[in-house]
Length: 492
Image (tube, rainbow, N blue to C red; front, top):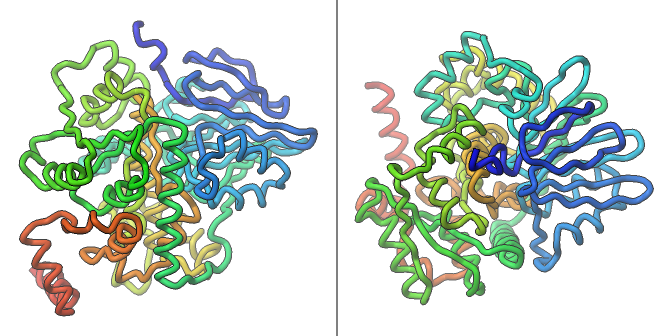
């Protein structure tokens, strides 16, 4: 096959036994008990001393030291015990899995929203891990689920609307589960443990939150630009404009763009960034993916990596592969966590209610996950000052829908979401909730104002509808009118 090097590109597999790896690979030993098989295009960094070893799969970035490499950051972390090491990574951003091993343990955890995955399964009393559930299933000979509930979900319109992503820690295979964000896998004892939030989160002043958030986003993007050429999608919205604002002082190796589709033709998502960037002497590129010109061999490799992808993105991914494979892409996919997109008026929250909010309550298996997650929240996170709905969106939706798209893109290029940092997300969630919600998005506005205020001369997503919303906010009547509108819709 012409594209053999694209089979499970940038993926990894961890095995306690010798096996035949189904993709081009390199091998590292972990604690003399496990072997790490990883694709040559996956960035891997290893440091060790006589007590412990750290293996980083992917990249992380330090906003306080943008010149630091993966090696530099790992070497400074080597002296720490596991719990302190985890806390030390909170101020970093990236897309990574970090493997910690010493004489008696092997532990793994992901970046803040698990954009690089850890899937795990047991076969013949041995624990195996991989970044991709289909890879794990192929190597271990695990069949797809026969559970009627899951079969129905994976065939449903709900599945397609969620960008063909899983629910919670479940997968297409009953025996294979995912480690969710804020948890780590104790490999030798085969336990999943939560490491955050397990204590009360310190409250911060809104002005301090803006200052810290702006500094972190700018530092992370600067750090990434010091290592790789970057491409940044820019729309008329506020999410991408924060990333754009953080590049004010970066003049090299930045490719600003948007993927064209009929839905945005002659719409603000094209003319707003075009106008903003031209005004500041930067090129804006409109990419035209061709869905009728995809190489059949590439398509075959794409579906081998994931038999159930959202193929809407296939032309875009193929274009990235042909023309931009050397660049690191910087989407804004994590920031919806801080928008408080979901909440409920119900006083007694149940797993059924949470499943209803995400429009999957007709599937009992999804209700099971939300009930189990809620029980864990009430047991370990209830007193932490974090909003239940914000944390659920972080650990479930962002992990799955955003993570699935990025994993499918591994065949073409690497992604890095600049908001993918434990400390940054937690800091932004500290901002007054009503000011984070639509249509206000005050936190977005204030961060951009701090980084590059001239970018605010054109409002986010300009339209008559949004202009009316902003006027209603000025007069303090948006919330009551919106509440009345929803009440009338519910009664009808």
